[in-house]
Image (cartoon, rainbow, N blue to C red; front, side):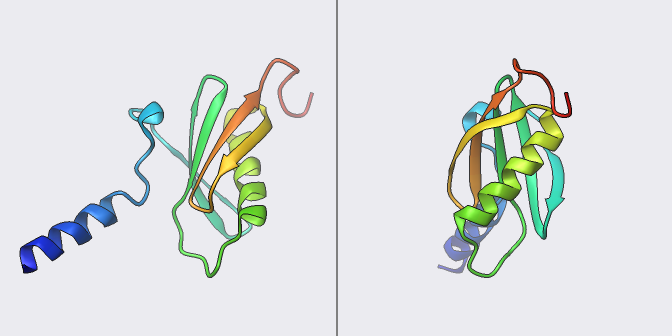
Length: 102
């Protein structure tokens, strides 16, 4: 029984910042924005941000905004739209209208 509990714990711990299938094999860039630490992966015009730090009662509004900032910093593109939850945010990027700062 202890072995099973240990395996469940280790599996859950290992999955904390595991990318979704579409982003496997892409090295993350770790960014901290306003106290939220996120691993950001970009593939073409889609990006994924995974929050890796613990925060008390995170809400999607503030976390989504921070994830958008982190994704824009890493990709150099504007976030067109995003969705997800407080832990994993997936964003569609708009790179055609010019890079950030242009």
